[in-house]
Image (tube, rainbow, N blue to C red; front, side, top):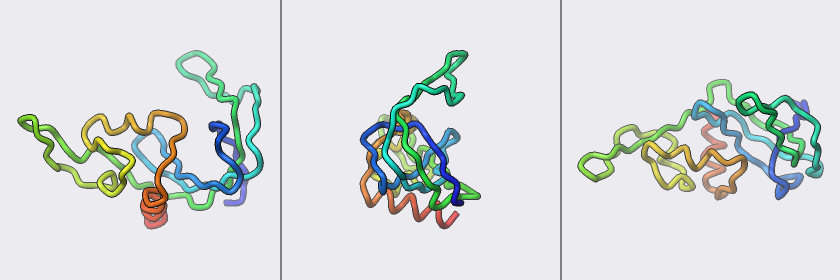
Length: 132
């Protein structure tokens, strides 16, 4: 996919950086590479939160490197039983380290707009996207 897209992101990103894209529904859907310089724009891009316009003014262009047709899903893999964590639903979450809590509140790690992850976690997720 050669098309250039723009996404709202924090300004610490720069051209050449790569990222995995996580979406609602517990899915890693793509690997992207950022292009150009970040910029600030208050132009409305149509995002809302409730009934209010939700503006992410720091933006950077990106190119999709790999898009998954069947995105890998992550979910909690442990459940608490008698004050102990028990491994119950193994999945991709067990192979990545930036999510320390593998229980039902695991998604708190992904609720911010941009997070930095280790190269090892990036490679594991990139591989899962490529194989899906």
